[in-house]
Amino acid sequence: MDTPRVYRCEALVLRHRDSGETDRVLRVLSDRYGMFDVVARGLRRAASRRAGHLEPLTRVDLLLAHGRTYDVVTQAQARAVYRSLRESLELLALAGQAVDLVCALLPERQESAGVYRRLVWLLEQLDAASGGGRVALLFFVVGVLREVGFGIEAGRCVRCGRDLAADQDLVLSAAAGGAVCRVCAHDAGAVRMLDADATAVLRAVARGDWPAARRTAAEADLRTPLAAALDHAQYHSDQVLYARGFAAAVERLGERVVS
Ligand SMILES: [Zn+2]
Image 1 (cartoon, rainbow, N blue to C red):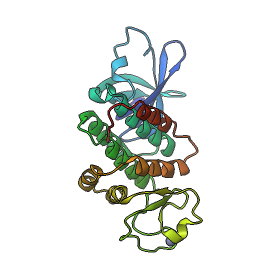
Image 2: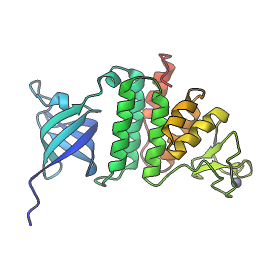
Image 3: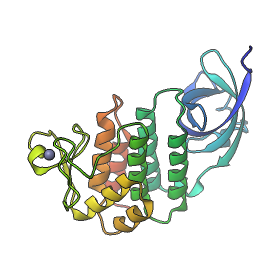
């Protein structure tokens, strides 16, 4: 049986790069077919009507034709362009870290509907610009890690199994795969120490409890739990999470803090 020449999917544009004279190769995460590259021919021509539908961080309906190297975009209709998110450097820095994480952790062309839904959720949260951007990113990062099999254990020591439920301050080790008790922390390599407030947030996030995460985050400095979650992701990937550096630079600009 012949495979159909064209197919439809819904996707988020993650990144793009120039190709040839006027083309652009887009890395997309689709609802049904996972993450892959497609080519948009002539997209860099001034008259291209599709350009506005295919910017990074756009949710778009695509009609794709099978191609030799890349499948080819034949139609593109934006569903959401997240305008408020685009206008804020801090929110873009948060979204950039999410995109980095997806690109680093997902294999090509592997169905990832759960990660797709989580990224749509995050972009909607950031675009609503109602604060809570950083806790939304933390919730996303830990959720994606769980989705791809690298969940962060926050309830018991991952080395000796000791119950940590009563501990106020978590010690997290990326190499060990989550929280370690004080005894096991001594030879667990690099660790991040979370204070009581940050511990409460991370526990809510690890349980997948968004209302509790949002509530506890109001009191907490989220930089350490976010750094710990990204360490965890970095430990499981060969690709460097470059957007962390960009996000740190944005923070140093000392603009409005999105937490
Ligand atoms: Zn232990």
